[in-house]
Length: 381
Image 1 (cartoon, rainbow, N blue to C red):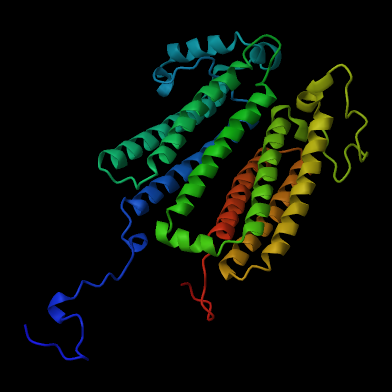
Image 2 (image 1 turned 90 degrees about the horizontal axis):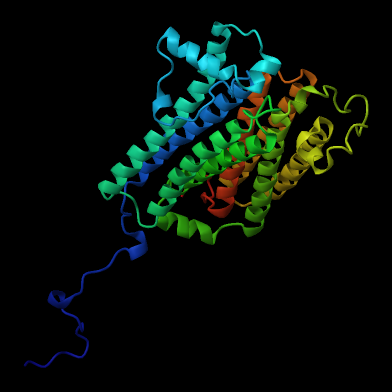
């Protein structure tokens, strides 16, 4: 072997190792993240429509028009006069008909029936879209690692929601009831928002690669994230209280603002004969709590927004600004609903506004956790 000069390179070109340009964290992510995100966005839109349609069903007094739970055979509406008459006769046996709608014509019954049938049909379609999408992505091996259980949980909650829907409806079919129990309505709406929130969060997570999320989390703002989490929970509580208001039509009992019946604290706020049921059945107390919680949400939202102004991330600041605008709009809609005794159009706008606000808080919270950094010139990087 020939002697090697002192200053000769130790590694010859033929013995060089391949240079690793990227780490495992930067490897191309496996799974159809973009396609799954699109599928989730379709589900999000369908759940939003489901919540709006559910509100319309309640406001038109249609929720008890179908008196049985038939997940499969109930897919089709009555197709002939005999079938319609059979459904109408079943409806005539429940207290809502005998106490509120006695003398209703068949055409009037068909009107409320089709609202409830449409609501149930959309629920079935949501389940179908979820099942087809999940099975396709699973069978083709396109679900990213760690995501199968998350996507499965969305479907499981959807199935539970169907059962809770019937549990809610059945409460209005018994003697002495002309509408569903308000706490069951709140449970039904609450699960809908949990499903909506999970879908929205997962869609946001899938909008960037795992590598990007890990890098972004290092720049996350823990305090702002914690405050926005608290605001999200308080808003969720307000939504549940709003369902209690809707369940007993408390929004149409006191139509003045800022006072209630000319009083700051209504004299009928507590009925000794109801006891703890005042919190579910007393319109004065339920609406008073809804108003007070609304003020708390608005004040807390302003505090969170002011904190967000200190964020070094432009996109994060923008997300919280959009959120505070939605809060102001929702407060305005709430006041208009009270003043006008919750007509159909305003009530539906207020309910959809709750969905929009909840989603925007969730989006701002995501940016607090996983900020999108910008360069000095303001461009994304």
